[in-house]
Image 1 (tube, rainbow over the protein chains, first blue to last red):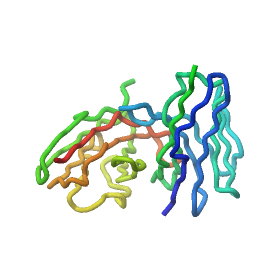
Image 2 (cartoon, chains in turn red, green):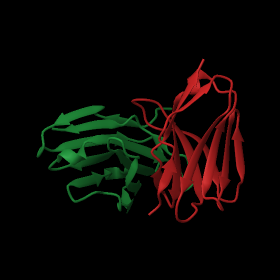
Image 3 (cartoon, rainbow over the protein chains, first blue to last red):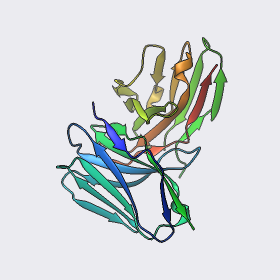
Length: 110
Length: 114
């Protein structure tokens, strides 16, 4: 089955900087890859979806890239704000079965 | 529009007891999913309903877990009898279309088995 790797160490950055989170996977490339945000005590909230034939997707301050050769997705938050502090999860969509990474905690300091 | 709701938010039970978790998806969403996150691990898929039919239950850990979705609306997940390793947060999600669609997650039910 798929194994998803996200950096388990928290990422600490200064407000205004760009945060870059990594998601690596083994095995086959999924048709879709999604990024979610999770706050403590809450369920994941959808942020962005990227298809295997797309290299890059943007939404406001968010950008996702998908490299099927490297088996990697990068998630960027530009002009980061303290309100962006949360855990970010990547999920591979394999025919309606999601494989989640364990998430990376982002701390944005004012 | 109401989001996905789950009940209860917390449940503490003794080993060997039975617990039933409930999920109400977003109205009109045919696809309903159950996931579980045990301490320190990633969220893992349990099963997927399309309306009242089980589309994929390959993630269900064993036959102590029973999921139902009568009438294709809300779903229940029963654990009987509960074991210590069943402790974790159980999430429900729903989507309109299915594969490739956004999944909307509920807040989760935190289950503690003592």
